[in-house]
Length: 274
Image (cartoon, rainbow, N blue to C red; front, side):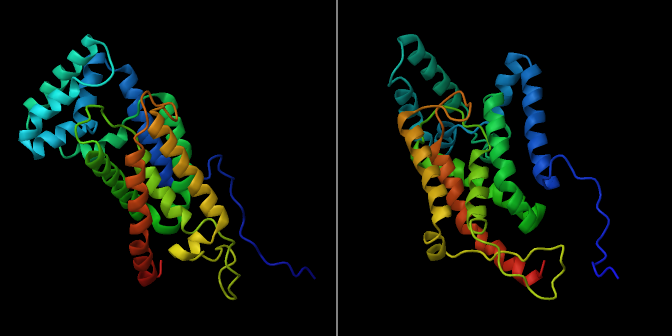
């Protein structure tokens, strides 16, 4: 007699085994970039100015008295006289409109500087968005990524309020998802629970901060990530195909948001039993 259990019939194995919300996120980012590549330059520039996060614009909106300082700061630093004059003209254009465009604190994540920038972020999103989406579902995945994006913009604003460089890219939201995933993926799976459905592996528990500090794989990964961001930020080098230096402070703000907001979602997960 064959004592093997009756297992469900297996369907076709998908080529990309990603949660639907992660696949949709990558598809939306790619579609937006495709549209930007075919737009006339003037329309693409208008899109950039209306969706990218520019710290100086927010600083001038919150404190109109800082407008003169923003224009003065734009004329300083490295560059030819023509470049410095162009920066000051751009600064005058920004401070002339007192609107902060608050949506840009989130919409900047929809834009990317190049295909390489987009691909780099898509790979990281697939790697760290997947465990978060599978554990918490599409809604909480989206809320956590959005919180990281907004926290990244605010951190960038606090540390470089007069910057005229448009901030684009989903890296701050991905950093939030990475910080969240780091709290439960770098550990061996929990022991099998008798009576649990065989198809569902036991859910790994969320590690506390002391537990995470004792987790060597997690600390090694996070250490490399922090050092890489700081080095590229200090040296003002591009990373991941972006056309300008990385906004390491935005990445850090997103990371902190994801790391400390995740336990709130975990408690709601426990109450709902989902």
